[in-house]
Length: 113
Image (tube, rainbow, N blue to C red):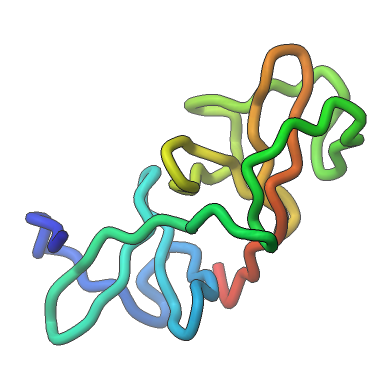
């Protein structure tokens, strides 16, 4: 679905984190994963897959933040749409807050910040 915000154009040096998504580059923009094609901005989602599973991992020991850190709006990590939920990008990994722990939902390659 194309975005209605056409005032900002994503590209190198636009200020948003660029990530590898399938065979192209998308940009993280306030909880959205956006791809520019044909002059239009399209909303994307990291699909649930073997690489990026939606699994509970209560034994996951999160790196990139303190033990007591909780992901959510304003936590300092960029949110990424993954399947039907939001994950948070931490050191190239998708972290998902789940109860009293954080699940690892796999890698997401950062191309540039």
